[in-house]
Length: 240
Image 1 (cartoon, rainbow, N blue to C red):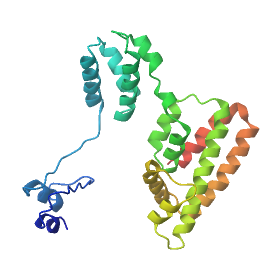
Image 2 (cartoon, rainbow, N blue to C red; image 1 turned 180 degrees about the horizontal axis):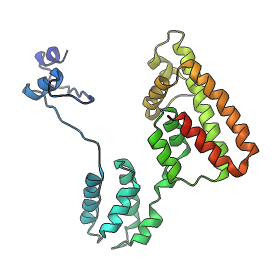
Image 3 (spheres, rainbow, N blue to C red; image 1 turned 30 degrees about the horizontal axis):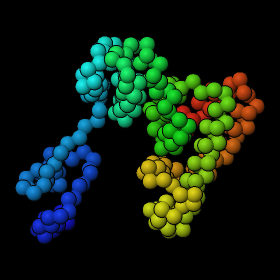
Image 4 (cartoon, helix red, strand yellow; image 1 turned 90 degrees about the vertical axis):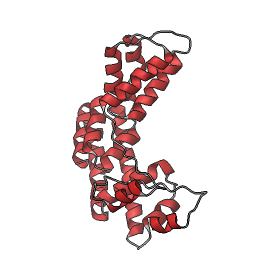
C-alpha cells in the first residue's frame, strides 16, 4: 500500500505511520529507511536521565539557580512521565513570574503529584489492568475516607459503560461504531483507553465485576475505619 502511494507521487499530503517495535528484519522498517521519500525515526520511552536534562534546561533558560537535589525531587515526583513533569514545570514557571529564585521548600509546596492523580486515573488504570500504575497511584495518594465511595461509584459507572459496550458488540456491532455513538458521549481522549478496557473485560467478567463492586461498596459503608484498606485490596486485585 505504501509503495502504491509513493508511486503516485502525492505532493500535498504526508503520511505518518506509528508502529510498535520494528526489528531490523522488518520489511516496513527497511523500506522506510532506504526509500528516498520516506524516513524512519525511533522513539524511546522517557527515563530519569532524559527528564533530568529537560528539567536542567528549563531552569537554565529561565536563568533560575537550582540545586541538583531540587531537580532530583522534580524528576522523582513525575514518575517517569514527561507530561507530569511539564505540568509541574509550567506551575513553577507561573510561580516565578516576579521571582528570580526558588527554594526546594517552595518546590515541595508547589509540586505534589499525589494530588494530580484523580479518581478517573485510578479507575481507568484498574480497568485496563495496569497493576503497576494502579499501585503507584495508591501509594502516592492519601485518599480521605469520603473519597472511597466516590472511587468505588466511579468504578461502577465505568464498568456499567463497558457492559453496555460489550452487549452492543455481541450484537455484531462494530466497536468503533459503538464508541462513536455511545450515550453519554465518550470524549476523544478517553476512547483509546476504553478500547483497551474492552479487550481486558469480556461480557461475563464485566458482569461479575459489577456484582463484586456492589458488594465492596456495602462493605466499605459498614467498615468506614478500614474502608481505604478494603478499597485498595479490591482495586489492586482487579488490576492484575
